[in-house]
Image (cartoon, rainbow, N blue to C red; front, side, top):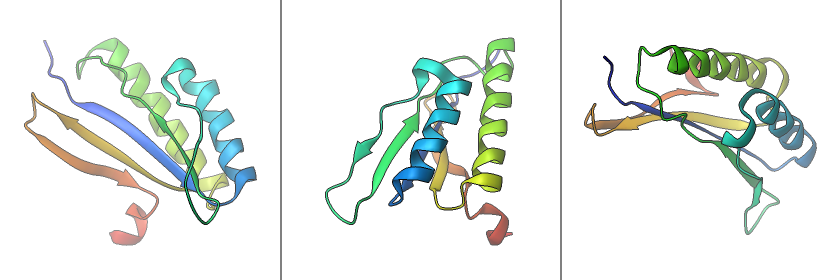
Length: 109
């Protein structure tokens, strides 16, 4: 069984080097689920996102992507503090949307 709860990660920075390094890590972990970086219109900001995997919670496939997201978020925290990021969880099965993790989560506790 299981239910749908999508998880997406959005990453933004005004520093090209750290953003592109984080993007390369994301591509290594998630492959085609990672968008190309998109330039903002001002202040040199750019962003990319990791799309949801589409698997139901509790399925082996979902667990695999949960582990990859956890590894990616650890990398963002440890190596890419010039990047701002948030994980968004949403879905019709949960009838909700929320920020489930972010670069600021540890400071918010």
